[in-house]
Structure formats: structure tokens, C-alpha cells
Image (tube, rainbow, N blue to C red; front, side, top):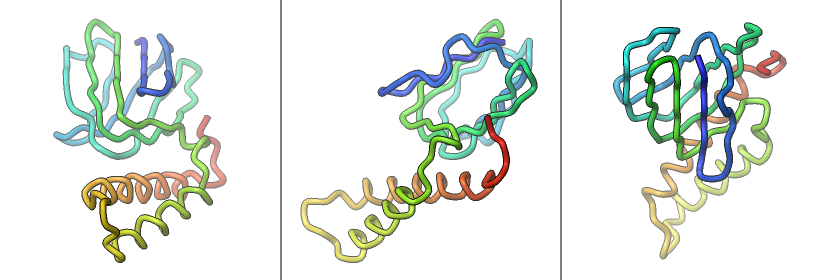
Length: 138
């Protein structure tokens, strides 16, 4: 199978040969294997697992976007996507602290829904880092 995963900022995978993909969708977690039926679904926030052709598994944080599977080609357009080993734990913890302060202070001209979404993303990113701390994920 060929995986392409892109965000507005960059491509994380481009026609990368993979054996298996586990991805969080709005309908629940799905596993994509070779010869998967055609599929189009919305992504939810969480961990995506990419098993590469060399059988190494990479953990990726995703949030929002869509997945399309057709003829062993997987295309993912994600709002946010980061490989677990790329996530900066200290920066993520600081972002959580700042968001919590903003939420408590109810700062004017700040969209609370936006703060809550960013906070949820950062908490999920931190959980992913914790899960794979000390483990090779790439």
C-alpha cells in the first residue's frame, strides 16, 4: 500500500510503502490492510500507527482531516500531524500550562473553543509522548 499524509505545512509521508495503518476516525479506530475496501472518513484526534515496509512502526499524532483509501492508495489530509519523536515534550507541557491559564482567566478577545481544542490536542500529544517514552517509534 502507498501512504501519503499531508498537512497544510508539510508532507509527512509521500507515496511511502506501508504494510498496515491504524487511524482514529470519527466512527472509531480503523485498521487499513492491503486490498481494503474503498473508504472516505473524517479523522478524529489521536494516535495513528504506521507499519512501514521494513516492519518498523511509527506513531503519529493526528487531529482533524480526512482519509481516503482507494486501490491500495491511502491519502490523508490532516489539520495537524506530527511523528511522536518530533513532539517537544517541554514545549507541549508549556502550551498546556498557558492554555489552562487563559481558560481560567477568560481573556478577552480569545475564542474559548479554540483554546479548548488546542488544549485537547496538546494533552493528546503529551499522552502519545508518554506512551512511547524510551521506546523506538521510528
